[in-house]
Amino acid sequence: MSLIARFQRTFERRWVLVLSATLIGPISGVLLWITLQNAYWDYWLAPKLKAHDYYIYPELRYTFFNIVLLLWCLDGLVVSGLSAWSAMTSRSTARWRYRSVAVYFALFVVLILGGSLMIYVRSRGF
Image 1 (spheres, rainbow, N blue to C red):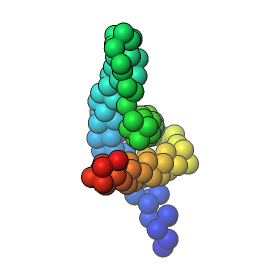
Image 2: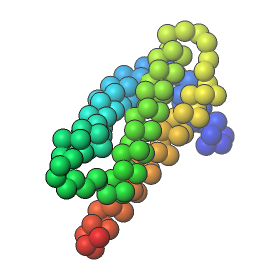
Image 3: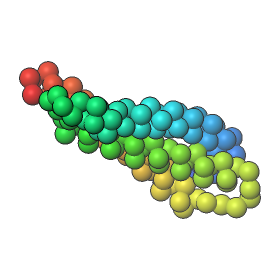
C-alpha cells in the first residue's frame, strides 16, 4: 500500500476529521488574530503615530515570515472547515481536504525552516 493511499484512508475516518477540526481550527484562529494585530501595529498604526519621528519598518525577513504565517493560519482554517464539513455530512471533500492538508504541513515546514534560518542569520549579526 502506498503512503499516499494510507494518508488518504487515515483522513477518511470520522474521529480524525473531528480531531483535526477541533485542534487545527482554534489554533489557526488564535494565531491569525495575534498575527493580524501585530501586523496592524507594525505596518499601519506605528508608522502613522511615529510619522514625525524616524520610524523603521520591520526587516524584510520578518515580513516574509509574517506572510507565510498568515497563509498557514488561513489554510489551517480551511482544513478545519473542510474536516468539520466532511465529519458532519456524508459528502466527501476528499480531494480538496488532502490538498489543503498537504499545503498546511508544507507551510509548517517552511515556517520551521524559515524561523531557524532567521535565528541563524540573527546570530551572525545580520
